[in-house]
Image (cartoon, rainbow, N blue to C red; front, side):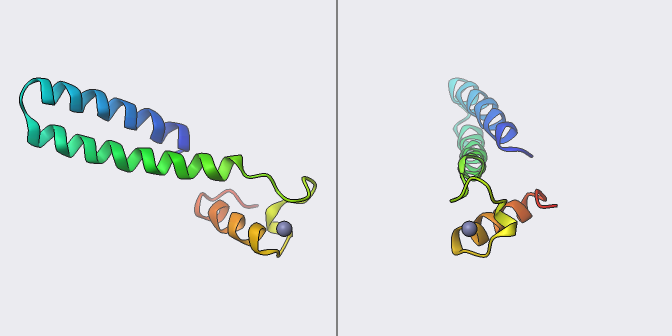
Length: 83
Ligand SMILES: [Zn+2]
């Protein structure tokens, strides 16, 4: 799931949580709210990674061994985004 997909999923789950709460189903509302929180956290993590600029602007993170690029490369590897 991409960052934008996590964001949209969080929004959809919040809508469902509000509807469940309006019906008085607080257990379901709470469960949906927790799921929404998880997706929102993952969306924020993805957005952080996608906003990272390398220190040179010329170098791909996986081509550099400095601590920051190493950390970025680990995130990219998690998402299968390295060559
Ligand atoms: Zn670097």
